[in-house]
Length: 303
Image (cartoon, rainbow, N blue to C red; front, side, top):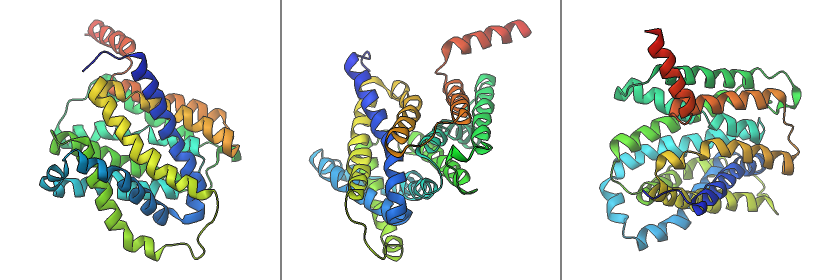
């Protein structure tokens, strides 16, 4: 792993801006196409981008050798959660949706603890509680400008985050040594196949016209295809612990894009809840070392 350079930080910002925009594009395109048809086009267009790269890099055999686990991964990392997020985008703003997405590290840690018996520190447990307090603040935001118009919107997005947590544990424990391009291309392929019959049933009666197609292409080609290529490149250069910094930056960009392009309001509940969620993520993942060390010292003195 190389030392983090200015170029790496710039790429982290670019990736965060790209993935932050995905919630904006979901918010624009989901009402026009419907959640399932939209996601079918997203994964199919992402596959068109990554499949040639996978072939050029000679990774198809690796994909074939691990297809069963990659198929399971595709359900928990793309097929189901992508559709759930697209559904939630019908009923909440892009900013809140991205803050909910930031809870993925919580569920990843909980599943790793419950299923794989990975140790969780008291500091991490406190981080979980802080983060879920932030989610509670978002759920009970009383202002009409919060953008949440359906009681199932937030639970749907949270369940998608649980599935992302499952997927990350599968990658860590079942797909070690398998390249990111093989995993992503395979997951996109299986998601495309699985969603075809549902997309045909749920296709729009009248196909939308105009600039909304830009959002569809941006979701598939830029946010999924190019985004994952950039993400795995960063992991190879600076490691996953540094690349996870996108978790903190994505909500900032998403709230910014939602406010600029959709005139979405930024409420005090959103700001406070988002701060709690991101603080909780930092504590759970150990990205707040100063506070972590202070916590250890207090714990030692307490004994």
